[in-house]
Image 1 (tube, rainbow, N blue to C red):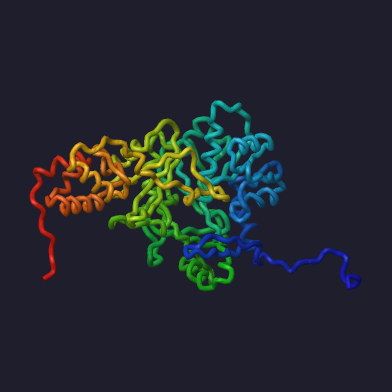
Image 2 (image 1 turned 60 degrees about the horizontal axis):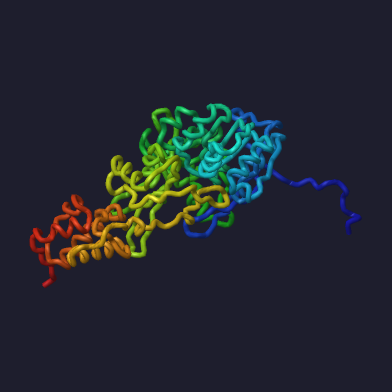
Length: 472
């Protein structure tokens, strides 16, 4: 009976440590994890960063990201807690950089929050000389959600001053309430830094770089990042086992019951005491016996003057072979082989991508992050444009190249390594030559002359093949 109910608004029994929201993040097992964040977690984020940003009622923000992505928490409450205005960006506009740039100008947006991938597309449109120039009121751009290569901002700084707007890199994770570190960016840093510098911890957080035994590592040494302090979430909803695994006791705190979150991110401290992001611990891969961090390759490739943006992924071929593939967005005319040659001059052979795929722009997810699932598979066959074999011997060698490389055909002048070959596949090819021709071709000959024509020319002078070992 409503007649017996009070007419005033109910007073909720709400405390700062009650849950404010649950955001689900992807899990390595395929089962999403619900991260429980409290009201205290969110409010203290803005208290702790107020001195850096001085947000106020005159600021205009955009809600660019999905509310299923925790960057939206910063966008929503950054505007509303400071009395500012929030512009909700239509999805179609968020995926059309030109339309989004127009929205920033039309609405007088002053605070913009972007993943580096999304901002790169926006900056490309901003630099398009064929578009009419429109003044922007931006005073702050905050990067988050994925690793930032400072060199990718060189084009932006060529057209804009350091402080209009100010660019800030903020590393963060859902389990520690959006942001963890703060790093102001400058033109000089963009021109000099290859590493993704994520800076120093927010004042009410502590960052620890630890080894596998939870011991602090020396400056310059790569370790796993652990985060403790007021931003650490309550844990995973309904997942006590996983919560205990990732939210561990903090041995460096004097507060009873203090916990720290194990991020799974690899970092190191540079000589200035700033954190540098190296990559994900679970993104390290082992290829042909070598442990490789794709982020290290990306850092080298972004030094190429014509490469504006790059990502390196590991692809497993139907044959079971594992290959590194680089995807690059060019600043100007660029050939894929130029990028591989650039890598060869600076990286060991096992870290040189088997292929470089040039894209107009990187595909993005609904959260504005790089959509690795949408990256196209490299088509090694498009490089096969060499002349046909002149002799039956050359044709057989071409067929062996194609078989080992997993290609439909190979021309007699096509290079083994340009078609995705590497040292392990080279060994397989030598074994196939031995089995088919009965000769022992030295491996170094393939590196000196990596085409079917060159290999076929060596067959007549090669020694007899060694007999295979048999069990008696």
